[in-house]
Image 1 (cartoon, rainbow, N blue to C red):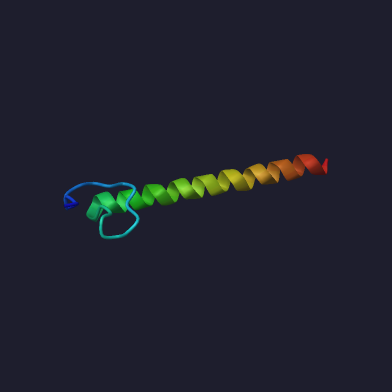
Image 2 (tube, one colour; image 1 turned 135 degrees about the vertical axis):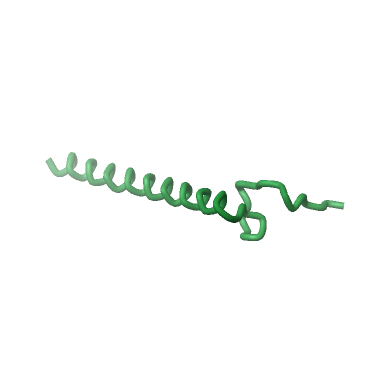
Length: 56
């Protein structure tokens, strides 16, 4: 019997059913999106820097 606790918090859940809801879920999604945007910005500016160095 592999019953899941409905009150268990799973930050690595892949489906929407087991993700946290409400304010906690909203902040969880917001921090994930901010982290993704920060990583994308770091890659973008890093590539611009490297291309600028290679062009000199």
